[in-house]
Amino acid sequence: MAPTRAEIEALAMAAAEQLPEPFRSYLAKVVIHVTDFPDEEVMAAMQLETPFDILGLYQGHPVGSEGEEATGRMPPAIFLYRRPLLDAWAEGEDSLEALVTHVLVHEVGHHFGLSDEDMDAIEASVG
Image (cartoon, rainbow, N blue to C red):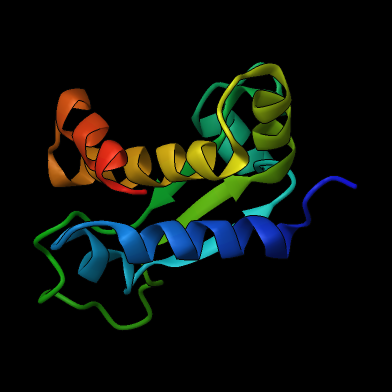
């Protein structure tokens, strides 16, 4: 049986709890959604050829603007796309936990201004 949305969300939550500060504190405020595929709006905005071309997406206000709360603004969110994740997992050598951690770290890492090397170090610290 392929892992469910709830199982992938649990993997993401467990990974978030293992990350170093301030990453962990920031992720505590981020809503994690697991859906099978990106919606049509994301497909168009990201100019994706297929829904399998993206594993995850961060949507939210830039880091550092939390004090500028706007009424009605949605909380920051990370969308994990279950079917593309499962395909990448089946085709790769990493565990599903490692893949979910990788996507989670990279979706938020760029919003912190982290380099790929910084994000790789964070991933390596999770164990």
